[in-house]
Image 1 (cartoon, rainbow, N blue to C red):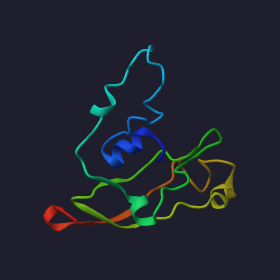
Image 2: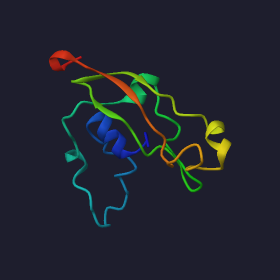
Image 3: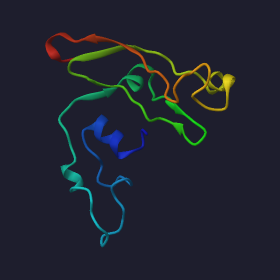
Image 4: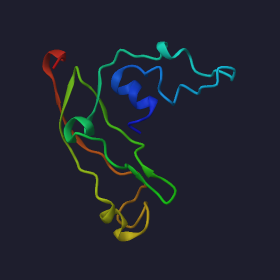
Length: 125
């Protein structure tokens, strides 16, 4: 989800040292993650939905047990520019054929995400 450390890592290239996902507060407990300052990457990534629509969808997965965002469309900001993003249907539309997905109208519990992309010549914006 947008408030997760994984989203931070993909969108900002790093995870803030104080992020609750990586800051367990238990100094004596086992450490399974590398040093937080070394969790970085050099890819310039953008989220299609956040870029085009100004926010992430409210959900991309809609089941009885979970309704939230599991799926994202990431793109290289150096090489691509998203031109459009298909809107995610409202909850009222999704529940016309049942309480959750999949349903007779939607064959998966994940909602389809679509975007038209433009290749950026020269490799920069």
